[in-house]
Length: 361
Image 1 (cartoon, rainbow, N blue to C red):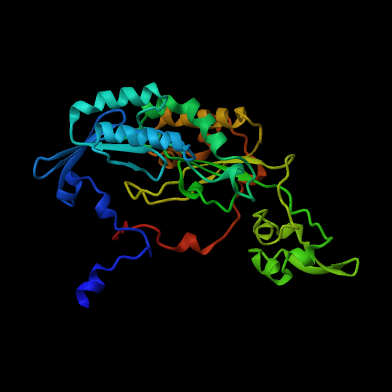
Image 2 (image 1 turned 135 degrees about the horizontal axis):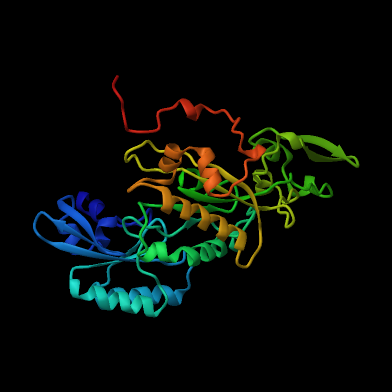
């Protein structure tokens, strides 16, 4: 019975990742001596045994067709014994043991329009949320803006010299299922008006107590309209998060005229050199202007060029701003100071230790 229980397989939970590792990685797991970048988009890991695994990284869209997935799989079969992986920033990495396969693989990727790069000191692919493709609370698109920004910055992905790593993220609203809270540059969709309440039929579509409880700032109150139970919003308390619309279709927040984007800078997750930090507001509002979003693309490029031209080696965006000061950064980036830049929000996170770094006096 014990043997039967040990061999029993179910469909509960994901399979263990170890069964998908390339043999060379499985054999040298935890025994790597060093790794280094060979050229843009290519690195090698060398094990204590002398074994080598080469990685080729290509930029790819987060949302892709079956045809592209099959294309990647065919390349992996041709050059990598079938092994590839996707990174958390939507890059695709091909893992191989034969150095002679690197250049032919890169040639096939570039022939299909996929840039190779993003390793080491470079701008990596943009991690982003759902946008208009899927999300009901989106203030802007995600995939469309990412495509436009990376088209403009592709040179910094595939080989143009930059001081260090730069991570860009996009979230289509402040509920932020992307990493905009801690990225060097963050593009954030913003609603600027409270929900438009459709009182007729609200009590039939929505559970009023649940809607009230869904508001993180307590801005939603019960009321009666035309002798029917309904809701009202205290506008000065509303933070335009769309949580209410998530649980109540009668409270839409999307507004083609007033929805737009903001740009945040200076965040990072890494513990290297300085502690992790949150992003801070740089540009409060830019208009939604599809299909190419020229205002957003221009603003992001300007900030990137300020960093490229003023950062020291390995210096992240926030570290550079700390060194030169926010007033000089705003001047270099042609950003006008506005009332929205006054940071008067207080929260407990400011007093919590957010790093593994410890200082002893």
